[in-house]
Image 1 (tube, protein in one colour):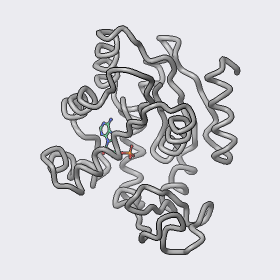
Image 2 (cartoon, helix red, strand yellow; image 1 turned 60 degrees about the horizontal axis):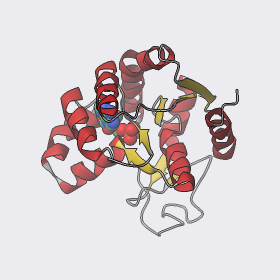
Image 3 (cartoon, rainbow, N blue to C red; image 1 turned 180 degrees about the horizontal axis):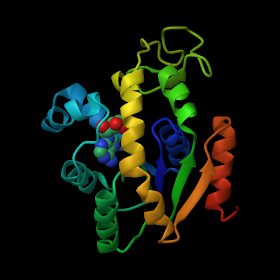
Length: 210
Ligand code: AMP
């Protein structure tokens, strides 16, 4: 399964919920890249400057990464990949070679103003527990109420970078909506509302509802 949507649409949150509940493998390219940057690996060194300015990491790097990380058996949820048409085409080829095309593509729809509001208030700890300064604050204020680690703002969630990421989304990622629509695999889900509401809407789409 694939999640599409603007930055801050809720892909990460929903992909984690779905993968946990159904025991599917969750593959977040953003998380993989952030760990690589933190560990200073070759991949991290290549990706860092693109991520810091809100640009996309080049397609060949991302396709190589996914080729390495795709599980050979079992179901999986892709969160943050593909983000360009060449990435989607490469993924189609990889999955076709293994005779297991992606079943569903969930497109989480949110307006740009919501994206800006969500990302500018987003805070997280180093273990990936995510909060929002206004909508979902940690009960411990500046530290995580689940693991007590300090909360921080992702460098690419600062206002200037959020605008760059939105522009990149509109130019490079939105065309994937047409790509998957043409293949009859796109399922649109309203990304506004509570995480539980969105999760229910996704379940209903996956069950074949409208
Ligand atoms: P995310 O956590 O999904 O918002 O990703 C954070 C950043 O990682 C993005 O702004 C990109 O710089 C980079 N990134 C993640 N996934 C991809 C991808 N599929 N293609 C290119 N860059 C990516």
